Image (cartoon, rainbow, N blue to C red; front, side, top):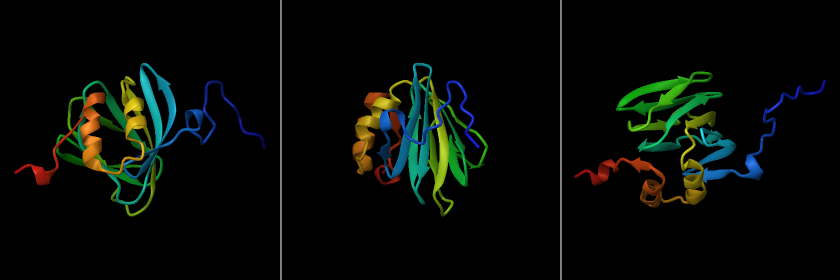
Length: 151
């Protein structure tokens, strides 16, 4: 049986131009760039997370494709399960965590696209979280200070 090919659908597991980024231990695969949106597939290894941060210019959304992801928006914790959609509003601190004990696949999108692809290109393979948090403000993303520096 052949696969149904729909117009303007991406059937490739590859990212645009074969790209995928290592973002703090997660694999992000860009699927669509447009001025009004940016869509990427994410693979969250066990126990990976993105700490609290805000987007100046984008609303961000995510939907686990399998498993579950814990999100925190304005300090309120919720668990998203496969097929559910989480909204991470611009200018409100949010974070997400894979506490499921297994690898989780998810789809993310941001509206509008803003500078997220440029940020991901810049921080690809940077494993030092402090360095990532120093770079991010140049791209409209502001990380909250870690608890250890809140003295």
